[in-house]
Image (cartoon, rainbow, N blue to C red; front, side):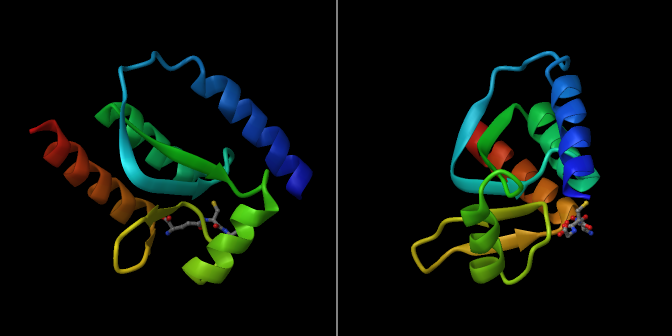
Length: 112
Ligand SMILES: N[C@@H](CCC(=O)N[C@@H](CS)C(=O)NCC(=O)O)C(=O)O
């Protein structure tokens, strides 16, 4: 199963390289836990592309530590999940629609 996902992920990653590059602004304090073949993750990555923003991306199929962090600190292994670093502790935001809304708001704020 994992090898099928890896193969699909490789295909998706290759296709994503065909999307024209925008200039991207990196949003600080954010990490996206994801894997390439997940359609919900793709939705978030395309939104980032459309908004012209970048965040650190952590492929949980590549590093066991990232999967363990997601499960241990976020509470479950479900991707995409956006980790938002904060002074009072991190917020782990699950659900692609909520992540896209959050990124839209941040992009608007930082564009001012
Ligand atoms: N409603 C969620 C669905 C996310 C979802 O189902 N993600 C799948 C991957 S496509 C997942 O994390 N499954 C658990 C796993 O792969 O271990 C969203 O929109 O983000």
